[in-house]
Image (cartoon, rainbow, N blue to C red):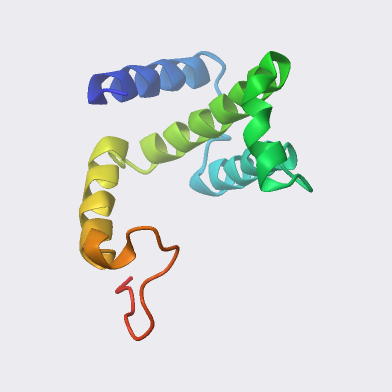
Length: 123
């Protein structure tokens, strides 16, 4: 997603909330709590499934539609939270990726879920 797309979505969500006078409810605490609820609703689709069963969900269009709706809810609350906190999501992701590239060098973690024993990630 291009940075301008994120800006456009953020502006549209800001206008949506404003037209309904919902800014009063869109506090960082409330948005973070709503975000966690939506993430839980997304995770519920995968609860108790084996990795293979979870991977095969993409083959069922109805399930993909339901997952897309939950993913959209997560994105909406995340973008609203970032907007209220004046966080540039694209820039935050770029900074985090740069940090992760340093913390998890590809030559040390390629094909591994963790750093080799004796190596610690810095944060």
